[in-house]
Image (cartoon, rainbow, N blue to C red; front, side, top):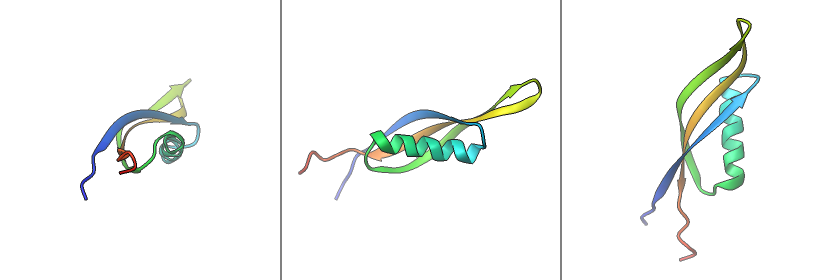
Length: 71
């Protein structure tokens, strides 16, 4: 059986860690997208204020299989 997938880019931020930012991004994407099969962390950035890290941000490329329309 063949399938076709789509890739969409999302950005997610956490006050705790990169891992938490990734987890939150995937959890949120799962509320909207069906058939998520994987994600690639494309970029990761720390946000700094007064010399301290205040948040961790990731840009994710999320891969999901397109619905076959019930066929």
